[in-house]
Length: 96
Image (cartoon, rainbow, N blue to C red; front, side, top):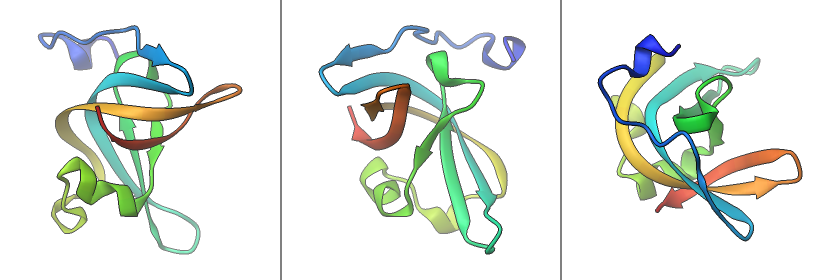
């Protein structure tokens, strides 16, 4: 996974402020749930392993057209804000 981010400066530490964190997202994953509905996650910084969920209604605020995404990883370069929960990031809520 470290080689995937080689050549791109990625801030490994999110900027946590209150109930949200800001980090650099470098990959947007599109997959499908058990009902055939699309599911989105962004990966970047300390969240490269599991990613952070992005709900479909948030994609337009990130400047992402869901119809242009292919299943699997899609390269992006966005600074995003994630809502934090008790055990880490819960979901992306917009651009930072």
